[in-house]
Length: 526
Image (tube, rainbow, N blue to C red; front, side, top):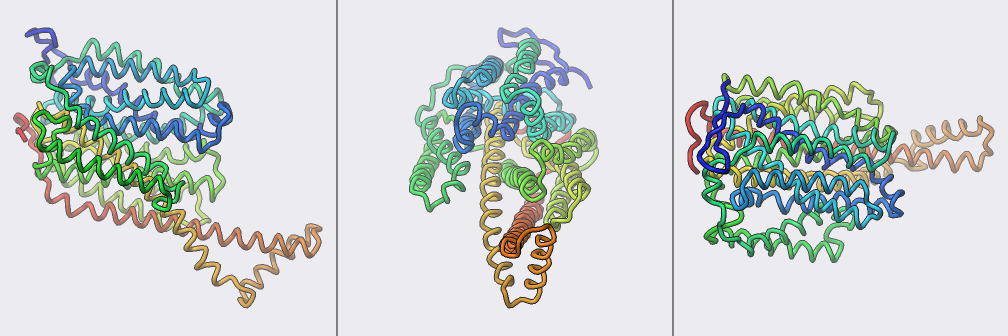
């Protein structure tokens, strides 16, 4: 494949840049940013202990990052048009790298949260810009390869995050979770400076008026929504006054934002792109993909740690097969897409992901490593057949000058879908576990012969160890209750994985709405 012709941002001079060099330049930054969404998770207890705070307080290092990230994501296209894409990207990488260094130096939790906000705000720019750049520098027939390369970072980075974070924290310090971004950021800054250039249509639009109302309403609506999704379960959702108040504020803010953006002359987010049925359907499918992917990715480590006793690092390693499957499949899909209808790959991927969720929904407490390995490996393979075709099909209908705006909305909805999926999955596990305890406990009575026999066997075991009969009876009851609790938890995880199965199967009919992407010619205007 030949090199792509790009205009630099100083005039009419044309430069030749190989698309793969450009891809590597933007991929370093994207991988770094996506990795930071999960790399801190396993370090929270260490952060809390080091900074004299509770684990609940330390979780604001996650929430603050996600809130800032969510606010910036949808306005990235506008920011690129206003300030220039290259300038914005390099500024964002510098900001993210500097904030990472300062997070590592943070002397208190408040300082750490502040710089996590800076990280989230600057990092939110990186995903949409890198995606827009790759969709432009690769010709239409090779966009599948470009999206496969980009998808490796988006899908694999969250899988590696807990593993890298756990290893660094256990062997060095939680501060190295942030320091590792520094060399990656420097490499990305150098490569972006050398090989990334603004296309002419972005230069023509620099200097548009600023949509202050749109920016304000978006920040209020998305910010409060993200806080609700992240903290709602801890506060018992609408049983909490502040959740109800934030929900009202978020609804009013987002409703006003949607109305304003549709009538604004220069909207900060151009919602008119959603008029295209292929694009709007693709955005919805990506939202559901985020819902199922992130929901399952969060509850599986919880299952491994709470029911099977895995340490945090081992739980992260146990999830590696999903990343391995994606790593294998995505490059293959990028090559095959030039010969096969991308919608067929998407269909196969949705069915495969649904099957992997069904396999997880049949697990029991006697599971072994391979019972976890194969569903995740299949899920990784299937995700490769979902992510790359879906991104390519969705963006095929968007004009080049609208690519930044379209990728911003696309990535925002994936993240919101992920946040809703995490909140839904964790809530359902908790509520379903309590329901199953009530159902199973109703059968554990003194009048049940099976209960009497089990209790007698456990009690005899304790007595055989030299424990007095009274204490042995108390311990036997505790063990029996623990057995009921563990079975109830397992059933609740099965229940949620079953719901995720239905989510991916439910995506299948919508695939037939999508138009087959072109392999040649310019991208159509929307």
